[in-house]
Amino acid sequence: MDKGNNGLSRGDRNRNARLAALRAVLPRDHAILGIDLAQSRQAAVLADHDSRVLARWRPRCSPWMLGELLDRALRKALAAGYSGITVACEPTGHRWMVISQLAAARGMPMVCVQPLVVARAREAEDYTRGKNDDRDAVLIARLAAQLHCYLPEQADQGWARLRHLGARRSRLIEASTMCVQQLRDLLEVAWPAVLPAAADPLESATWLACLSAALSRGDGDLGAVHATGQDAFIAAARGGLGAWGARRICRRIAVAVYAALADGTGVQAQRPGALERAFSVLGDWQTVRGELADVNARMLQALDAMGVLEVAGSIPGVSALQVAAILAETGDPSRFTTARAMVKHAGLAPCENSSGNHAGQAAISRRGRPALRLAAWRAVWSALRHNAVYAARYAGLTGRDSDRLTDQQARAAIAAALIRQVHAIITRRIPWDADIAAGRRHPGQEVTAQAA
Image (cartoon, rainbow, N blue to C red):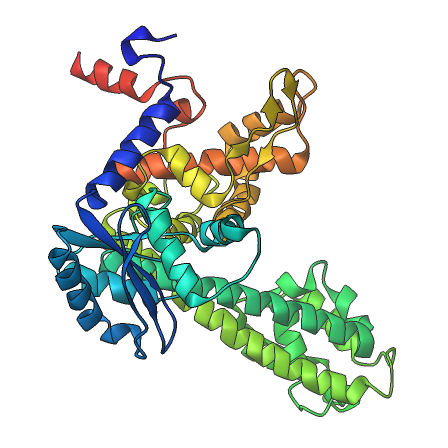
């Protein structure tokens, strides 16, 4: 036990610091204005730290019109002997940002309470799941008084823009995946002979250009396209090759696709309509790919404008774009006091299951942002192929000489390590270092050597 720190662990010290920061914005001489936000009708209560209600309001207005309510609540709190108010609400959609701006303009501190915490408190209130806005407003004020809340992110324009670009990129990736699945399904029904023309057809620019040329008539008549001749078909495919990001055509694939034009295999009743639909899906996918490339470029520009593009691209096997996708879900990493807090935000922190002499199997908490876990998970796949540090750690975690983990458990551990290291390189503005990442050298040792 460390007597100098009264036996406190690092977690104890971090928790004490977090509670002190919350108490600074929730002093006991402040009343608490709990607001349950909605689109056009709000519920608000002014309460003390013992959850006694001092006033209640039910304004019928949008969140943008709540400035008058904040002023009225402040006057009521001052009349009751308090020195000010602290605003508390759930992070409901975008509405909490409106309240944050209104409160900041009046110099009022604000905290947010997680909806899950409110739901659990609602059940603990009277052991039922009864819900109404007035009750939730009281619960929000009570949870804030008990410091079951957090300080919301105060993002500047750069980080806010990156968040919006990341959300857009996520939707475009989903749309692209949907187009790929639809295209494969339609071709398996109507024209299965074209799929073996390339080893990985949906990843081949030549195959996609040939498919576009084959379906360009829009009526599903492959025989008419075959009748134009092989040279004319390849020339048409070569003309559309640039739209798929390539310059040179693979003649072997183009000849195989042309030969498949004469194959009549497929559900004949479905063939014309399915191929017509496949051509439409192919056009949608081409549009989505173009929009996705534009968003990717914009995200890299956002990192460059914030001065972190170089360090973001310093991790071998992990592109700057993948780091940008992670940062789009976390926001500014400096708002997290520790790298572990950022891992917990992703829901990748180990969740212990032990009591007394019993030690159950631990698992990740999964309490966090699923999109952040997905961004880190995607980055791990390329990192394991091209990053020697991560590959060695994966081998150690799944090897026979240790407590062997499954493939998914090991990848989750590496995803958590990646998030911690992203926190380090972005907050410190230093490139990724293989020796530090592998634990062969502590970051402080390098500074001491340079100073010497």
